[in-house]
Image (cartoon, rainbow, N blue to C red; front, side, top):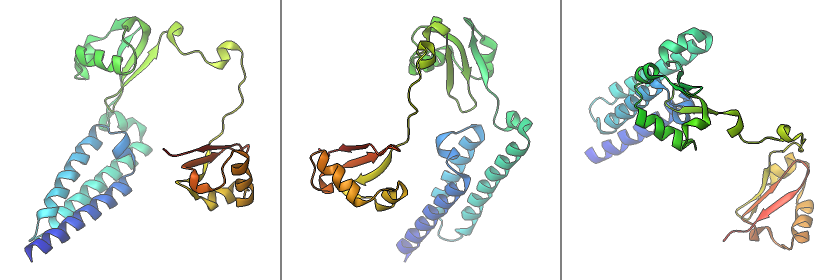
Length: 224
């Protein structure tokens, strides 16, 4: 009986955590700031406690939703009152600008020089002379603006006007035709079969992935 209770509370914990994560949104996963980091750890810890709480599971469950509500409330506040963001999430800090390292800003950001050098290398900059400005963001990542002669060449620099790229749509995945995507692009299976035959294929099951752009150019990839 006790094992059954543990299974049920574990399922309740997993479902509750999933619901809260969906309500909070992807920011909690992809772009952690200071408060998101705290709430993420706390909710995870409470969720683990809920999984083994057999007597009164409603207590950690309530705490999970309270923390979730606080996160949502703060998100609404920072959205309506932008000035509150620097107090809740912090503000970006300039670490380096025009060849000058700001030691006081590094100290303020709790960033060691060795950590800064590591972040520069991770961003692809092994020579600090290639960096014009480096900013330590609220989520703990380093944003680097290279000096002008070290920036990647773009078409405007060479007076080129390339064609606008379009997003590809999957029409075949793992040997299965995606009818809804074909229909959305104004195409059908007859057109697709013709394209397959022209590229030397007779059956969509031979295709691992097939993508099509807005110009109806089909690219096919076989699995290996």
